[in-house]
Length: 490
Image: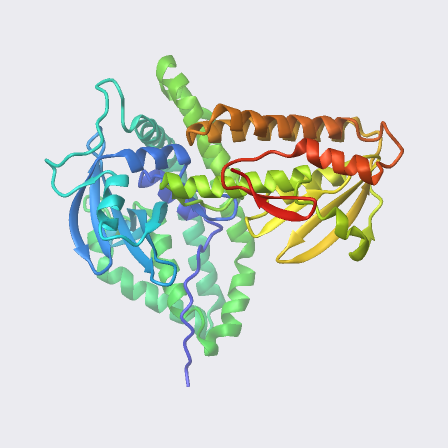
C-alpha cells in the first residue's frame, strides 16, 4: 500500500525564493537568519496605529483593513481567545499578506501576529480591543486623531520605495539564475530516469500544459519569461511526492545529486541580493538616499538576526506587570532575594574561569524569563552566581582575573541596561524617584563589578548583609525579600 505522509517544507532552496517574494510582493517583513518571517517593530507600530475599517466577522475572528497614504490596502485579522479559568481574554492582531506563486496561478497568505491586547474577560472586551487596534465599525467612525503634519505610515512609505527599487535592480538577474537552476534540475531528472524522477516530470508536464497559456508563457513571444514561477511549479511536483514510501530511497538519491546545483543557485542569489543592496541607494537623489539609509540598515539587521518574532502587548497594565517582574529580577540580581543563608545547604559546583565567563553568566541570567531568577551572593575576588530554574538551584563560583576588557563589558552592560530600563519606565509613566532607584541599583552594582579583583579578602557575613541592605529598593507591588523573609513594598 502506498502510504502518504503529508509534508510541507518550509523552503525548497534555503529561503532564496521567500526572500525574492519579499521584494517582488513588497512584503512588510523579512526572513531572518533562522528562516523566520519578521516584521520590524517600526512597521508594527505604524500598522497598529493605522486607522482600520471592520469588514466582516467569522467565528472568533474579525477581519479589517487599512489604507496607507500611498493607497496600498493592508488586510488584518483579529482573533479572540478566552480563558474562563483565569478570567482573561486576548485579542491578537495579525497581518494578512498575499504572495503570488506560479505566475499568479496561486496566492499564498502570510499571516503574521504583530500585537495583542490582554485583559479581564469583561462584557466590552471586544470593543476595548478594537479601540486599542484603532478599528472603526465603518469608515465614518472615530479613530485616533493625528496632527496634520504627522505621517501615520512614514516608515512604510520608505520601505515600499526601497523594495520597488530593489525589485528593478534584481528582476533580470533573478530570472537568469532561476532559469539556470530550472534547466539543471530538469536535466538531472531526465538523466536519472528512474520511477521517482519520471513521476516528478509527469506531474510537472501535466500541470504546465494546464496553466502555461494563462500564467507562465508570454502571449506575444510564446516563450517562458518567468523562471521563478517555473521553479515553483516544479517544487509543487516534488512536494506532491514527498513522503511517499515507495519513492523515499530514490527521492533521497536525487536530493543528494542536486546539492551542488542547489548550492550554486543559493550562492548566486545571495550575490544578487547583496549587490542590489550595495547599489540601491545610488538610484535615488541625495535627499531621498539619506532618508532610506536607516530603512536599508533595518532590512540587513533583520536578515542577519536570529531573534524570534515578537508579539507586542498593547495593554499598558499588562506591560507594567511584566515590568514589575523584571524589576523584581533586578532586585534579585542586586542581592535582595539571594539565598545567602542557604548556601551551605546547596551542593556547590566550582568552575575556575576568567571574568569573561562571568559576563556570559550575567547575560544568561538577565535574559531568563519570569519563571527564572538569578542572584549574585557575594562580591569579591570570587563571585558566587546563584541561578534558579524552575525551583532547582545551582551555584557556580567564578574567579576574577585582570581581564580589563571583560570588566568593561560588564560595566557597559549595566550602563546600557540602566538607559533601557529608565526609558521603558518613562514610557510607562513611572515616578522619577522610582526610576532613580533603579538607576542607582544599576550604577552601584556596576561599580562593584569594576572593583572585582581589587580586594582579595572575602567579605564576611556582616559585610554581605550590608551589601544586600545598601542595594535594597522598593517599588509598588514588587515582592522582595530581606533576611529571607518575604515582604511587599508599598
